[in-house]
Image 1 (tube, rainbow, N blue to C red):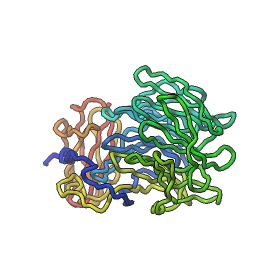
Image 2 (cartoon, rainbow, N blue to C red):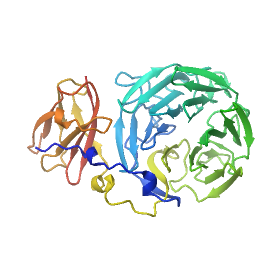
Image 3 (tube, rainbow, N blue to C red):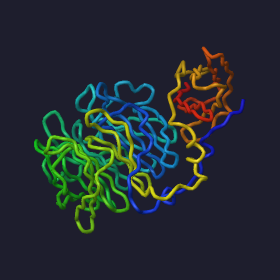
Image 4 (cartoon, one colour):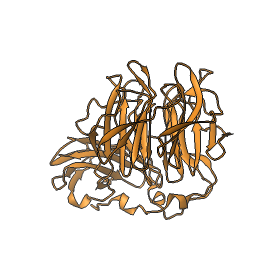
Length: 417
């Protein structure tokens, strides 16, 4: 049986080279986890990550990685790692520094959290770091500038907050910065342009539309033009090519919104654009990869799991991209693998959709094939089809296993002890 790793066929290409500068919205592959609101994001030059959140019944801790070049989601390690039960949360803050992502504070069974978790995308592992400065909180802001991460505002057990704290990952320490000069609040939104953070809207007991700029070089806040839309909280912001964008949220009409605005920091002017086509929502998630922004999920009358891309969608991608190779497959479905975790063998149930033995590939979270370190045998009889996967040669850690045919793709995250 041939062993392949589809990720080895992914070509390295510049996302900015695939798209021109004419912006438009395009719907992309749905988030493969449950619909959820108030999830967190962080991103890198080639991938975005979304995780945690609330699905209407439970707080979540699962995470998924999104690859814009292939429009493909991959489940990664949940916050807290294999032993991270109890780390579920929503209304957390997040940022990235270098090649690490960070998730801080939020709410779960404990209504106010103060912890900070660091995600290593190379090893697909989470590490608990120093608690956020100040006090435990939820519904605050988070952003990264250069080699520092920032968390602030939000709500604690006594009320709303206006403090701001900076995290130095080299020393694993927090230092307090200048307080936000607006009113203390929760559910504010922010974006970063040219090394400065723009923070506004939110809830201080009333809907807000004021906006402020924080400059870490001077550790000072300044008032900027108020948001041009209606006062609101639970909105979503992002920045692309030196321009800020702002959408959605819950406003003074007591409904969720889908209006969409851009902000020019040079002129301090807001301009309304065509509405976000995904529809009204609050507590949506957004991240930016290269010059492309992605917005989705959140809550309106249900918990949403869609994803939309903001960028130029008028130019077709080159036919030799990974999407041309992987695009023939449907969005991946979940595999049943047990026992998982394990240290010797795992059994994989083959879904009924496969009419013949599928190809199997195993790869680590650096995108490298490790199929040659595995062996397997299987049986297909129409009733109880399965594969026995020998993982004894794999080092401990998390991996992705994929079963593919001409029309189907099924994946699962496995943990080797």
